Image 1 (cartoon, rainbow, N blue to C red):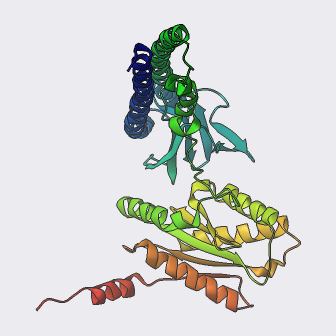
Image 2: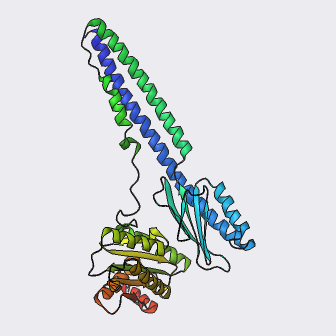
Image 3: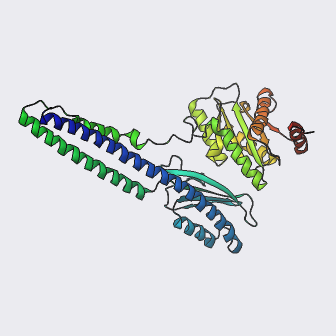
Length: 380
């Protein structure tokens, strides 16, 4: 093997090493960013719990939602590392707080809502607050799970490593060209493909694409497959706080609705029931809703009001065709599957009975406890 052949071999080895360098640098950068995202999620939960405690304790010596009370919430939000927006819902209204005005919260019909589709934004986190003289007070927050300073520093480090590898590959290629031209041999080098491979290494697949949407494309509400898991979480929370919960399922019968009508239907449900992440697709033309801190009477009242509202928004659909089934926790230790079954059964009865468009499943807690005891295995 001549000297030019040796240089070609060296160039090929350098090209492979450069590619490996690109891959290792990008992999380490991604691991660093993903690890930091996880740490920020944990920190956000800690800061949110601290904020909830602060909001509760401050109400002892400050009037709830007085200017001084609100200033306390703003100060904590500004001092936090991760939280970007907070909404507190009280008996007499809703109050919004943002780190940067207009970044995370929008107002819909006079009510604050977290903007959907925020890039690198997590949440909302949710907790009830125990405030003297107030009922059903809750606090929600969203947070940023990307540290932009760390991201920029990591990107800079990756680019410096890649640049260094490119310089080495370029110098190696120049040496090979020099000796091959001197020997009069044709130039074929693996290093020529290094720039193309560099582009591939820095493509969208390497840096990662945007995470899939939390909401379904048709209704911009929760996916149907997520209903049971979220209901289980909410039931656990309500059981811990000894509060009630309602679950409803609604569906249009004998009516085909277009995508635009369904989109309006879903959006009105998200607005009316106030938490988009607790509203879910159900089949082709139905919606399911989780209603925390809501008993049977409140649930019936709210679904009746929503029924009147949506049929007024969609007058082209027969108002008798929207059927709703409802069930509540009612002090029971009940699992999500059972509560969903009760609401779906009530919905089926409403779909089959032309006399009623809303049917609620009313449980007897004592009989339910006896039913649960009867399902447990007996030991002799």
